[in-house]
Structures are given as C-alpha cells and as structure tokens.
Length: 186
Image (tube, rainbow, N blue to C red; front, side, top):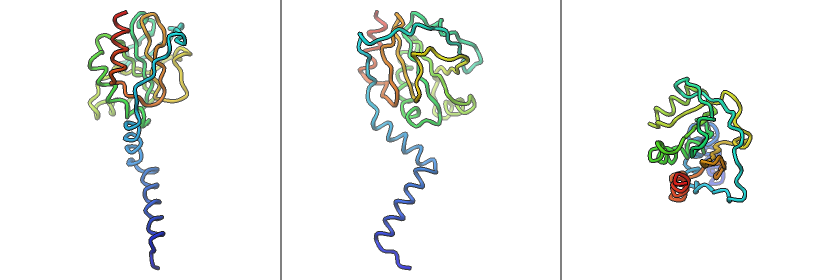
C-alpha cells in the first residue's frame, strides 16, 4: 500500500485530533489558547450594577473552618468560581495569583472550588499557589451564580457587583488594578 500525500496529511490530522481530544496535550493546548485570548475583565456600567443583596451563603475553607459570607459585607470582594479540570480556569490562575499577591491584605479574595478538595490541594501545591480556597456549603447568592466557569465577581464596599465576568480574563491588568484601587479608596 502506497501512501500518497493526501493520505499522509489525513493521518497527521487524525493524530493531532486524537492527541487534542484524548491526552493531556489537549488540556494544555486549551490552557495555552485561553491565555492567548484573555483580555481584561469588563466593568459593569454604574447604572446596570446590582447589589448582591443576599449575603446568606455559608462556605468552608481548605482548613475546614466555616465562613459566613456576611463577614465580607462592607469590604471589596473578589469571588472566583473555578475547577482544576477547567482549562480557562487554569489559564487565568497565574494572573489571579499576581493580583492576590498585591491586594490580598486589602481585598477579600474567595476562590470557590467546584472540585474535590484533594485535587484542589494537589493542584495548588504543584503550581505553587497560595490562594484562599473555599467550598460552598449552601448555595451562593443568586446574583453570584453562573452556568459556566470560570465566573468571577468583584463587589464594592456598598455590595454592588461591579464586575461579573464569565470565561477567561487577565486579572493582572492595569484596568483591573485601577478598578481595585478606586474601589478601595471609596
């Protein structure tokens, strides 16, 4: 059987598709692609901002301590819903870690994992991240829910949602840092 050019090209395409769909290579390719397309998060126009309203949300952190979302009321809060199996989530984690490094003592960060605790712990150790991880015990407020992850919300001191972003974003942008500085100065 003689391989002609068309058959060889088809075989290469099949191999690439198999690699992308059925091996870890595909996951890392999706992460890389997500990083390439990430842009700054969009700020909700002031007239369209809605208050969280309901702060009845109980969580548990990675140290097994319970946390009541009421405790974050009156603070600038960044809530990120994510999972280790989600390529866009993994892609935006380095930028979130950078922002957390600089604002972790001023902004209340909540990284809510939609994943098993063991997988999350292993992921954080492997990547060298030291983010505050939470797991929901009760349902989050209705305005902080999304059908997709990653989903990230920034809440101002008055409780208004000023950023509501689904999908990958570059959180370590000048635009996001200016927004956080502005919210902290209010």
